[in-house]
Length: 173
Image (cartoon, rainbow, N blue to C red):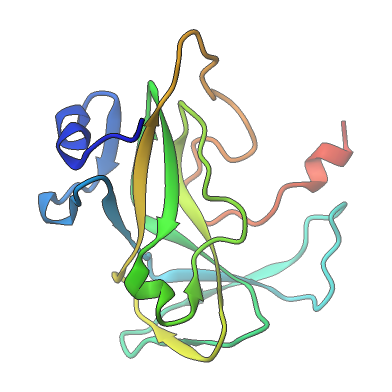
């Protein structure tokens, strides 16, 4: 089952943390998250799964930033989230999708117990200008049957900002 917006509100501050939380962003069965003002782009044209690929940080200026097709931009939510007892899921908002912006390539699925900011894998089908603070994604919550193992540690747990791929760490095992 997916939690209704009213159920999300009932669990805020307990099993569900969204910081900052603004009641006006609550939808019938989701909550809108906004885009932070930082982006990360890989500096190499060719990426290697076995390596920590170099990247550079870009700040989105007040006049916006132009996303270009064929380029991956890593962004993050401005909101910190933490979820206990539910599975958090992230999707783009329909108004964002109608501009040809995808907010994730494959990483819309969260783990029960995840705590941190959501890294967004932004790409577009045509050039489009984006702005910091725009409500870009919606988070929703699935119930989970018990017993379950809580996601407590991992390469992306308790992050404090945008995280590029850490797949290379799996090759080190």
